[in-house]
Image: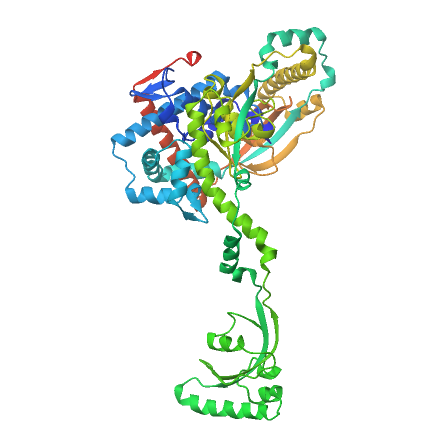
Length: 626
């Protein structure tokens, strides 16, 4: 599937993909506070700088999304690195202009709304509850003051208000709905014919391989690689240095004794004499006392329950209630039952249903796990809680030392008893160990690490891990010897040759069909079979997407047939014959209409964003100078 996507990113499809992944680059970190200095900004928007660091981080994020979308390699049709970087800068310019406009138009996030937003962030919670201590420690670890962070949230929220306002007011006219319904519900009668060239008919000699290699040497360079030094602080490593007082463990055990006690079940029977009103209570009590006396004098509880109990659910079974757990019965009944001894017959018990006699047959469950069996778990629980408090202060100390002595990680490591480690070689797309983390690779190839050779800020990873990194060694992209890439060059030449010849053959065939040749005649010449798809719908499954895309892009047939063709992935050429179009003006489904309105809102917001960027006073630094 990813291969198919890659092969289709041309023309308007490429720009559509760019639009889909062009989401705001929210740069949460210390960029706005530590950037600048002697380095020229990437751009200024109405006098406000976009730093090189902002651009590097946004570019890395954008490039990563492209690579994920296209399976690791970015199609050439989306442009080279310079074009992509320039596109990212344009997005940052538009977003800066949007933020300035929102502030000028007094879009605001109130104090109550701000508090709700911050309290709702999982990063500042413990056991689902917001904690001010965690909030302040987390901000300190990334170089933010609470005021600076709250200002950032207010800015982000104000631009979202502007965006939501545009999206929420989008609408589709009745004519627009009708036109869309007509197109969306359309079906087309299509036949197709494929031309496939036999790869064995093409020979690629050594001279061609060498010439192509020399002409395209940049394409066969090894990727940039690097090693980094890093120090890592984990919750587990902090826990190993924490001693837990056994008295605290014992206290925790007693506080949570219920959690270590299994549910208790009591097997019981009862006899009920109903008394729904106070006037009936005395008579019912007299009857239940008489029954109890008969049982005490030796009569069978089971027999009397079967004969006299007014509980229709249990009387037929001799009053048997089965196993009862706490919470199953009304409190008065349950309180008495769980205070009884085995085989005991209770005194009469009054509930809202009447008067009961209870007999307890057996007790099960209720076992309590011993302190020794849960001691290790409790110790780890307490140790984890203490470590969670300590790690925030440790990260803050590390961040301060790493920032103040930005040319080495060693002082920070020595002061906190950590070890400076070195990674293996890795590139932008993959690595092992610490470099397996996308965040680490992304920042490692950023300007701060690679060009300025500074220590990084705190990088928070999963499982309560925080790392700081700096450059150890860097290898620029290098040309790979022809011997290493010879087969790759051969494969590319073969693919190009197949595509060129198929395109030439297919184009000539298409012209002959448009001049009056029959599709059946062409199928005989190609020794191929015509696929009759019948009437197909725009989003029909089990039909090649290439067929659908081409077929629904063709002009409607007039008096005759309409033909079109396209080169497919792998070098095949497909010709389509369109013979009929049926339109359906049925009402749009509510979900389809809602999606259409949302798409309209997105397009209107993007238009507003580009308009604000175009009217801003922008000064750009040439990318080659950054």
